[in-house]
Image 1 (tube, rainbow, N blue to C red):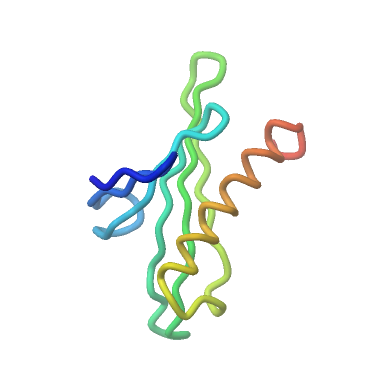
Image 2: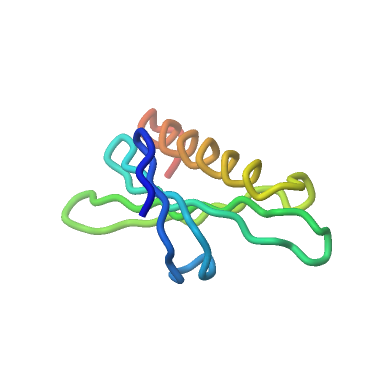
Length: 97
């Protein structure tokens, strides 16, 4: 596992393929993010798995970004984190279910 400020990477086969994924804890939510290559568009698809506990229950939300925009994995992974943080921000402000 590589530690970066507020962000970690790990090898993991859960959910988004057996590739390096980033994870962080943001405003009470765990965010796992990564990117998968779309063979049809030859672009990387940003993906995020967000989980949190509320009312004694575990909740989760899977997000995927556009499949035709990112030509590098790094760009898609960066977008995945931004996309997940925005979803969490919107949720904490009552804009998401």
